[in-house]
Image 1 (cartoon, rainbow, N blue to C red):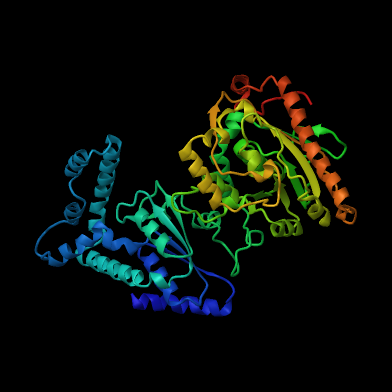
Image 2 (image 1 turned 30 degrees about the vertical axis):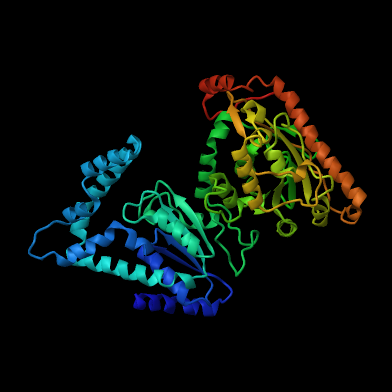
Amino acid sequence: MTYLVKLVERTIRPEHDRSPNRPIYLVGENIGACLALSVAALNPDIDLVLILANPATSFSKSQLQFLTPLLEVMPESLQLSLPYMFSLVTGDPLNMIKASFEKGLPLQMIGELTRGVNEMSSYLPVLADILPRDTLLWKLQMLRSASAFANSRLHAVKAETLILCSGKDLLLPSKEEGERLYQILPNSRIRNFEESGHFILMEDETDVVTIIKGSIFYRRSKNHDYVSDFIPPTPYEFRKMVESNQWINVAASPVMFSTLDDGKIVRSLAGIPSEGPVLFVGYHMLLGLELAPFVSQLLIERNILVRGIAHPMMFMKVAKGSLPEYPHFESMRIMGAVPVSAMNFYKLFSSKSHVLLYPGGMREALHRKGEEYKLFWPEQSEFVRMAARFGAKIVPFGVVGEDDIGELFFDYEDQMKIPYLRAQIEELTNQVTKLRNDATGEVANQPVHLPGILPKIPGRFYYYFGKPIETEGRKKELKDREKSHELYLHVKSEVERCIGYLKEKREKDPYRNLLPRLVYQATHGFTTEVPTFEI
């Protein structure tokens, strides 16, 4: 093991000397993860980022450890097949089922256990041909040595570490080991892949770069920068994001309108300025359901990637058992969302980006019963002067349709009446970064909770982007607080106007409900754009 560590050190040391301010990534699976941990422990002066897939540091807790003594004492003259040796370790499926019944495990769990054993046993004849006894024995001894070597040095590992854990690893207890390492390593994070097996990096659905980006582990220097370190999504990443949100497009059939420079409203995004900086300011629908269709359609139709200003909760390190990692959060991070801050605003505008801002934030997205389409904006302007500083165009927009896709029946007020849920909400709220501590009113009240929604037969989502508001040449004028506030209120009134326009016009849409849309697509083709109300 020492030789392998020195081999890696001879590779990374020159790289570090050439670029001391850039991180070096070490990706290790199984025994490679042990090697990466060992190198990081022995080289604390090098900025390393570790990506560990099902690390073999759990070897002493796995069934594999029992193979070594069996192989060592087995006479060469004894013709005992490798599959049989594995069966001694994994156990007979019938005995496992019997034991499961005795433990009172559910039938579904017993069935999954049996399938797992059968799948593993089907690979054994192949392993027997590939790995002779001596080779397998050497491999197991190497695993034991590497595991012990790495475990004895975990206390010295300070490197940023991402632990990838498979939920269906039949060789190592990877999920349990991931939790153990997470508790030991001070700068670590876990990503669980419930449907993956032991060799996760070899699976078709696994893209290491996408995982690194989605986990906020990519950086070009010592400190992560959400703006300069951003890598635009690949076609594969964009396709996965669209596929994961396809149900919204199918169920809600979004309709998008924009306003041209002459004030004409068109059913397209042609009115969106091509050149940045541009700031979209609008209403945040319940649970942010409007976000994915807008981001994807803008990229498809106009080849414009919008950078969302998001709550820091989407980027914080997740504590065990709290604030679960929602796939939606990862998608938004990959698509370019950044935590809300004045510095990130400045950097995005400096790079002439298209930026998306919801002044109502979490309070709007997690609103209460009867508050749909109500704006919860701060009393004071938060974005006007920054936009004017860079001459950004402000595009106000409204979106409606949440009341046509579900009914909010269990909101924050209801949940706070239940002691257990109240304690959960308070615990989660205390964990996240507090925003707008100096604000007053409802916008400052942002408890973290998940509202209960009763689905309806889907209606339709409608988006309306108003005429862009110019700030070019108004930097000096908008330094005045009163002038800045006037423009702020004007933007807010434009958002309310867009919402009112859509609420009125959707009443005249013959295809507002799902059934008429399905009939239309059945007769005209399911890829055909469904008509809407007359503009």
